[in-house]
Image (cartoon, rainbow, N blue to C red):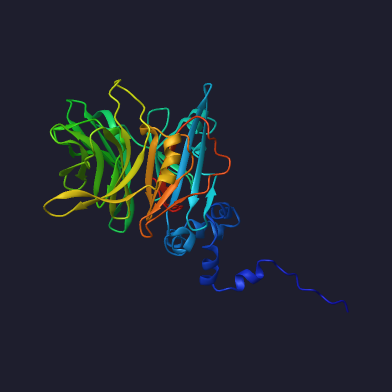
Length: 391
């Protein structure tokens, strides 16, 4: 009698493992593998789409605990545009590619190559696309939502996106600052994803000028912060409470005569930080591109009675020399990623990092394939969240 051999299934051993063990193994998958693995079977697709799996198993795996540094660069030469985008994982110390906005409008090169990243929060990007509509998207899903037109702002000055919790539900707010339609009052208008509409949240003090607002806003503890010009106190940082519509103004640190600063705000956790690209004033013309000769870091100190800036570090001369060769004031970029402050500028394309907890400076490896020619980089923190919904 012929021996009957039992057919072996490659997945038999996998399903003999306890469910918790299987989830722990799958949680170690890199992000690109995780997204591709959704197509393996219905069970994996359901698991990887599960908020519980993403926010517990996968988010707690060592490679995914810390946000990534996202770097994008629009290259424009001879009328042609293209966009390079890279994401750096501080745990694996590897640059990743493949985060693209091409899904926003299939076949439309204007969207693919001319979309502008305005901010990020908990896995979502706020994007400007050529049709004039502001769009929130999750590049890992991919999913997107075109926001309705703002109700009251006539001229937009700056905007940003922040994650928000309503009960146990994770939502987001898009904050816009601009001039109102009926007058020249500077108002704050907020889109709430849980309400799916815009509302006026308040207005900025009348003694503030618009200068500096275009440099963007950062968020910390239900406040947004931006640089602006106080007509009496000079350049400083405005903090605006999203909940209470109150504000606080703190002047920028002072410099010796003959020097000026290009200020950039950023946050690392609950710490509000200021990076200043310092250059020498030139009065020979109204508009002069100034070289950065020094980079100084401050931390915002606030109590119930006052606020001020405390210097915490300076970029070493060896790193600053690279910035001097490649950068101008208007191309200086920085962002907080976890406990790291990341800097790039001009055509440098290299990223300098200051670790706040270790008080050390390092260079990140240069992304392979990035174009060092025309165009300036833009840097943001990106928290991979395949489960984060856009609406």
